[in-house]
Image (cartoon, rainbow, N blue to C red; front, side, top):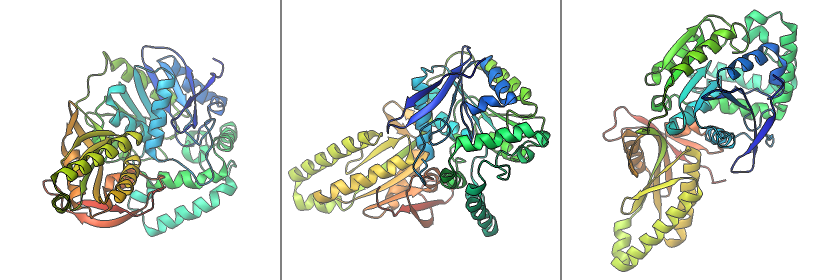
Length: 452
């Protein structure tokens, strides 16, 4: 097989996402690699090429470079998108490639993006394969101050060593011990670095990785899932894989032999064999989902009773109608869905938490000239689908968060904060709160930055 043709999908903001399509089969296997990838250079390492060719013998394979990486559009210095944008890009590629029977295969950080997409869009995903994934970054793992200081030193040091044998990242001597003396693999890894990322992109990319946390998303995944992990992985301990598999309903963990972290080095045939087995188990079509991951928003007009009494019934109804008109238009523009009115407020859903928060900031600003002040609560969690309505614990939590917000304030759950790394949003910790009817206290955060 020659190197497959590179195609481009255009995201809603105009960014071009590069992808390749090769192989054939009854299913589409969408492979999302980790942070360092280049669609052409990937094929220059013989074992990586063999790994991809073998996948192409099992299914129609779609491989992509995430935005800012490899052959996809590069970003401005210091810029890197939040996870919800990367998940949306994945959907754009699926649409461009006309993918119908889709199985997602996420390796390393690619697993986080695939997990988000599968949880939010179970109707579009037949199955999910995760390999070598850590669900959260160093900044969310209870790291010590000394650990974080070491990360800062590494981030400051890395750009000057990027693409050299000194960087350590993708260094086969550390990530794939069985190839420690393979000079060809080491040279290839250095070349991949140079082609995958500019040095200016290293710090923002890894800061997002340090802060991103999808652990709260895992229980919302409602598609068949298999977690693949080498038992003696040199980078990510097997205990991490066991925790991920335990958190996803009905997921299966395949503990494979080997110590190499990179999937395409070492005994990669065990991985492709496990993929083949999983694909063979997927029969029929996807069932209509009864639950999915969603970002739920509740708003409430502050002092509505007093304002209604001041204006009188007629003018108040007209003002409420204007409120609803603005809400519907802005939620639609923000990529959300207006679910229903709650009398003097609303409930809406979004695919991404950062998009939801920014929409609520805009909504609040637009209402101020009308003399209306709102409070808003935002939570990302599992919801139950009930026709055009939604229900479940995720909805209940969002409503309770909104009830605790002050006037002209957007209050969010810890899950929202964990998923918005890279969005530019800034949060202020308001501590733990008891939410009526919800077990265990929840950490809540106030959005404090200006809308950008």
